[in-house]
Length: 338
Image 1 (cartoon, rainbow, N blue to C red):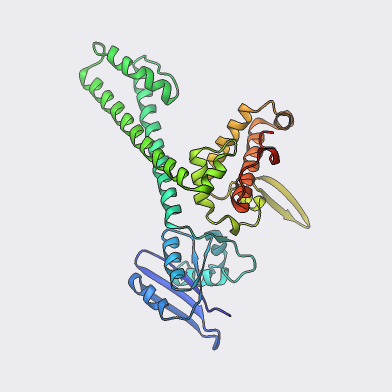
Image 2: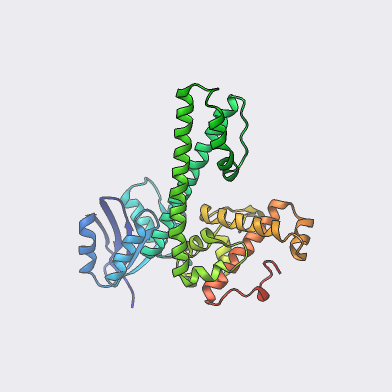
């Protein structure tokens, strides 16, 4: 069955559609209000609807799939080359319609509400961590100006700061000391909120078999397991571990002309947050297992950061293999730390 293809450019209030009538070849453009979109498609025969993967795209995809349509989410970078002239909603819809019909057009897996909720928790967790670091760094800087050097790291700061502030009762003006204590109270409140989010993620880990499977992999902890499972979506939509690693940004950039192709550094495309977590996990593997023969050999011939990136690449491929094949992690079959 040949579907009618729609390019759908979404926004908060106005939705632009672009399609070509397969029988007459007539170009059809529809400008709809948000409340009219589902009513428009419910009266249509099942169609192929392409949407750029941006804010709200997964919600629209789920709603349209419920109506019996096939929905494909496209990465914005695969759509941008087809915007020929001025960038308008109509031009974007036409570009989406063109991009989805290209051979091997890369797609983004449609996420469920649970997967989006998990990723929302991760975004809030990362934001709180940033705020906490900013506040504690400000405390260190302010007290350093007064001749007090505080240790690095949140855990070390947690131990010494209350006694430090108590010892300054007779040395600093009350207005400054009160403000420093209020800032430290904000830091402690942020830590309470961070711990609360981590407990919610821990419950997700306990209730999700896929997360439990990849949490068995060395270098994969609570944050990495829940983020990887939610970000990947349906693992079967990715062809191989190599493709997943390239999607996460560990594939090399390429530049070529005249038949010669040069391999450059890592592309660093894809999800920055997931790549950061995997790099931290790989760094822990390298530090804790640097005497393992293949890691020792890797460190001997490559710089430390290059070795960590290589281990992170292997970690990403292992995660894909566990999720795609549905089998528990087998240390004997993996050389992650063997």
